[in-house]
Length: 179
Image (cartoon, rainbow, N blue to C red; front, top):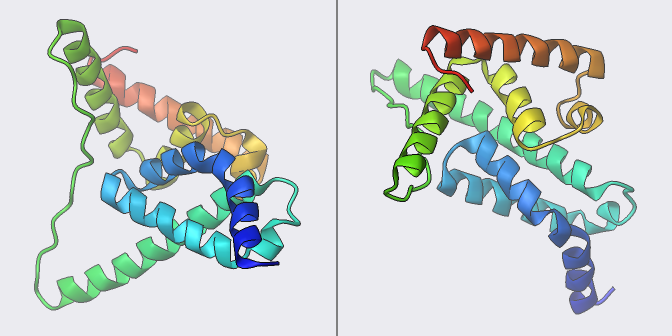
């Protein structure tokens, strides 16, 4: 396969999944720059594996799984680096994901406040529960897609998602926030 046809095949296969993959990257990372880096890393990996990708029935699920694995690998590397840094006596700060800018209307302000409260409540969930809520309820991934993505049986995903939603309701009720 020539270089041009290789690139055309890649674009034809991967481009339809760009929006969903970028949203997944943003949901996983919570910050634009990190999401862009993860998305770019995925595209590089996928391009290197184009011959394998051409043989896959559901390239979107495969790409999501690769992205998730890249994310987990990076989190593990970061955790090791952070542990080494903390062992050396340095302090590491936590970043807070930014929200998109809102218009200056009362309705937009209220909407942004609700989104902010929901985001804060999501941050109180375990990473596993937060990921399931975001993948299923926000991004619309099917249970079978999540199963492929994280490698956990559908029944386990359903029970964890149920517990995550219950915990989220509990957090929001305690704050007096209703959605």
